[in-house]
Length: 362
Image (cartoon, rainbow, N blue to C red; front, top):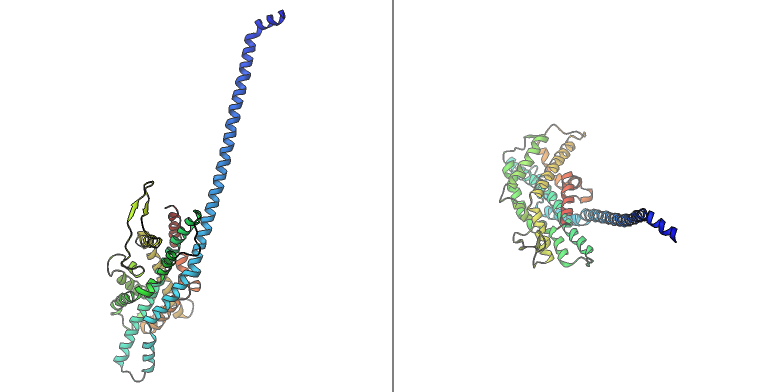
């Protein structure tokens, strides 16, 4: 016992220091181990979050591609078929061509020239109107299905029932027929007035090459688009009494929400907002320009019969080909080269990708 006390007196300071070091090391180890565990948990949570985000992105991409397929294979073909029938009903060139054929030996020269002049104006009217209508309808339908698709995606995410398609949504999609059922008479009147104005100085004997044809089509479109107030063409696709519902600021965010309106009104409001935007106007201009170029190339390659653009042809010989092009423009969308051309324009693809993505963040 004496030796132990003696040892304790001599070494107690070292012993306390040793225990202090050991104790401190243990505390540091426990702190480190706890920190390591928290880091591991955090990394696991982040990995799960990333995996969830990737899953959501994949779902959104799949949903977006599905929406585009619906537009291409269901909504647009039905609307295009109805529009094609209505344009043929309102602008039937067969009457004029039959009168020219049957009266070949009995009509006087002034009578023939009068009929040819009418056929010239109506052929260009029908072709340019078909060009503009098909371009606008393909873009309009895609706006519709992307807006509706976003609402359906959100409803699914919120575990709300979305099948069968509710009445408001069905009525909204039916608006794709508004142009053919209501807007077409006014559109034909204005387009024919524009065509007559541009073509009044064009004689049947005038030689048209691809540049002159391109310039003529663009002049008709520009004359038509200059009629009325800016973006007056929206009224061909939506009733002019479709007013935007009141927008109320959200209490919890800077976003705007629709208050006390039906789903149909909300969908129509969003569509009208998109159609009235500068971004959509830019997409329309790019699309129309691209289709005009494709039509001119198609007409003159066909005229040459050799796979290369023709150097020029008398307008009287060009008129029948212009009339035929109207039918090509109104072909079923899945086999319609012009509809596919619009679909593949990079600016168009980007616009609808952004529209869908931005809509999902509203």
